[in-house]
Length: 114
Image (cartoon, rainbow, N blue to C red; front, side):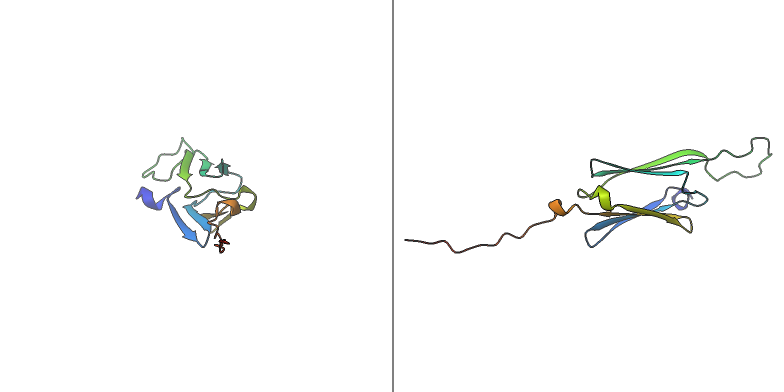
């Protein structure tokens, strides 16, 4: 099932942070590319090496070549605080909300009437 393979992802909110978890079995840190555009668009890509073409495959399901996933984020994120890590075949990207895009409470004062 391709949903279980490379590039399948989950996206969820944790407080004011978007967390993206991407299946990346067999992918190394050198092969993966994470790019944030205009603080609202995320590109996740990897180049998977080609396998031996001389082999006589009985079954061939593992992907090869380039894969890309693009996401539109629900709010602007702070590009300086984005973190990405790769462990146990899962790429985890944490994208904290840009402070200036947080809702701001406006205090209501009492007006002076004459």
